[in-house]
Image 1 (cartoon, rainbow, N blue to C red):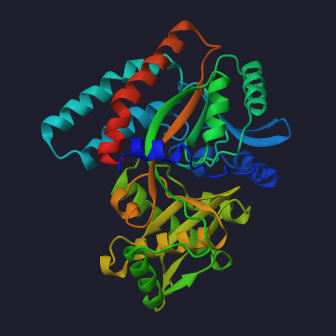
Image 2: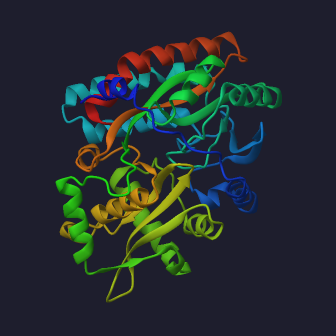
Image 3: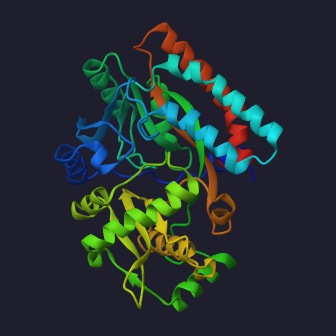
Length: 384
């Protein structure tokens, strides 16, 4: 089933969106980035993190300038649409002629994206993860956020990432009524069975059998020590930076330790019983009724039969089911996630540029058309 077909099906099946952000967690994130330079926390990111309050709701916001080169895609749309898009072609397009054509198309979009001004932005609800669950927003909420930020930052685009029609249907509707434009970003996979005992696919049963028999010892959040966070940085790097792409957020050991210490992310993993060394790690982030997994890593040099990645996914799925959450498994590993009950859905970035110049507004409209007519079919075809 394509994401478009899935989208039509879910029009009548809406998952309740996340509740409001926890103000304590928002304050903890903002204080973290006030206490440490951003590049000491995420090596490929420069940003400013502040708090936004609107109609009694609290959000972390980030501010970025168009002149900040080399920034990670979580704060720079050109890195996500252009740099990341070019990098993805080497993973998913084997035909040289097709790869060259796609790379040419992506590069041709560069001037349009530059004209849009989206890199000069204020981003709402940016937890600095690849997936930021969005709280439920009414039209009054969105209007308040829009008017407040236009007043404070009249030269910046307003950006809100990580929206999808399965979890955020009403919020997307409110954003549209308030003048925001939806730009397709990627295809994500959502495990939407929130029952305590979901029906397990054959692959899910295999994963849990593997977890019961593994020689690795499970590690709970409270058992993580300082040396474990240094190892967690290495394990995350093995998977997300070395195997996937260095364009992903480059979280440091300091960042991982502080995310845990300040109660923003809960960690779990496995360690070698003989050496005590961490072999796999995941960091779980909960917002309202959504669970995400922004940190995943394992020792890629170990035998594949050990199934470290499979066990991390099973651990997280079980956590979501036990707490009645739906699990946003983010993008990538499409077939793996489908075999474990996850549904593909297109993720959008909402942008507001009506207060900017004619050039920016026209460029965003061009982006909307190209991404919808060309980008979405490519996302569905390659599961990006």
